Image (cartoon, rainbow, N blue to C red):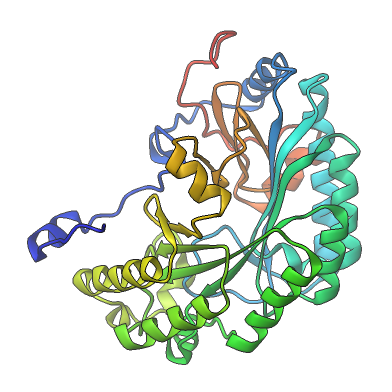
Length: 372
């Protein structure tokens, strides 16, 4: 049960905080971690030959910039730009894989962004071939991606399913038209339901919808309508993320009208509405921001005390090392956190020179042969 909070507690707890995907969290990472350190971490990871890997690939491109977005994303409608990016991914994979030796089995693969389905079907197929030329995706692997229903075709879903993708996460945020206009994210209930139904028909074993709490213009009434629409689609999982207003870090958020943002107490009310509505509809609350059907493997693992969380979210398939490819990708390798450059030019320039594109922030631990 979600505990009640007083106004004093809400005021006291209304503070910016880093995401809880790592410990120590990103702001505490050192800034003296470079390509040579990453190579050493990969070599440590290569020793665990019996353990599977997890792979994350960051696709930064979007058709438009949603003004709420906190991701590392770039607006592009130019397929040639994505082709050049895939050239860089191919070089990076070729730089990383040899340091892993014989350790090439993958139990988890996720494409994130940005919007991975800004890639054409041919580009998605090429990306798959780049990865599978160096790594073996296990038959029981969790193979997932994030999509925007407004830019994703049934043909893309069909191709991805044929390649082996079995989980899909769709951004919704909020169906309220006032909220959508405020955040430049126009997406109808109908087109979302169409993609949800298509994913099920194509055999994806899990469909997840993402919502965001605390957006401009959100109201208890409109938010409740969104929740009812979402529940009617019967997703296997839902995420209800808290909106982070960080205009100093994400300048496009300056286009938002700050006065339209709900006050801290209002945001807490919106989250409580989501929590109570989803739990009443039969979903099991997991962690701070996730919900799953009771028979979903995440919910089962949570009840049994064997649930894991990493940079890719909650999972039942623990992979001790995560390799990240693409600009701003974050990995957890050989006892070290590793992040690539946030900037596309810096990232592509590094890999074109045959240098691993480590941004210089990374390891919160001392790497040694025993640092696992």
